[in-house]
Length: 353
Image (cartoon, rainbow, N blue to C red; front, side):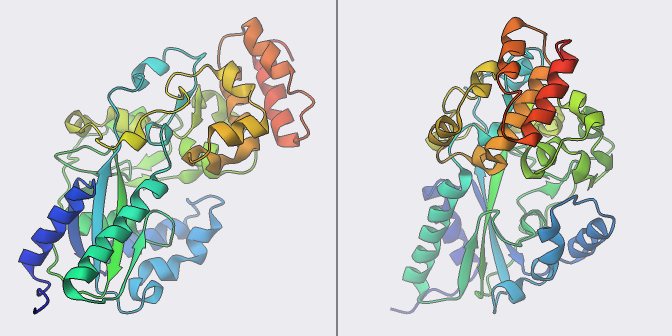
């Protein structure tokens, strides 16, 4: 039997296989970052990546996909929705400062663990249909310019808040890629539909979106509460509010998210009551409890000290209740200087320093 030619009809079959594996969209891009690569280089030169030095160190690999995976000529980009309308409403958390506000993507199972095996299964299915081919699968864990390639693949455009936005699905979704040497027909790139809207810019609590399409990671709450390993700058602590892992404000403000689709993936459902948990309860977790309760969660990326640091700031931004002051007081002698600093700051904020 003659293997199928990687033509438009074959790409249509790829979309069917992807849907069977739980992906909501698949597109194909040429392995050339184009203008997006130049913008990325300019962003690094301005130092807007903060302490994420690996971004600069791996820049050559991001800018030249064949140097990461030899022979790459196409990037197969895929989307998987994670929005769970059954989760405790994020908008309510802004008015309930005693509760922890965790980014919606992190409420369930780590998306890397969900998507990577399915991307591999898709690659295996391609190999079964056409024979051995060159490829490598990625899920936000390697030097890949995933959003520019997703835009080139027609999955959406990069909005002013620097997230990918789909006209049909908003921005509540994950991305995954297959770098391949198959010369598949490329899809038409998506066009920008932000227009004059600046809702995301105005909604950012810390002013991290310093210009349309330009994010200063050093001010971004997601960076400060996840990637940042040091103290959270004092001038930004109050603006963080009760956000203890990531931030969704720009997505909540985006009008395109009225088209967001409910996730069909059960693994993205909230675990451990994290969509509505009380800050004092989470702050009381010992490190072994934290490791056990958050096994398989993306929240583990922040580390236990980062977890306590973030919750201390959130408690300091909340009401000066006996429960909050009591919880913070139990950590005043914590072995970590990082934790102690933020606990002391929080107690001073609550008038109990």
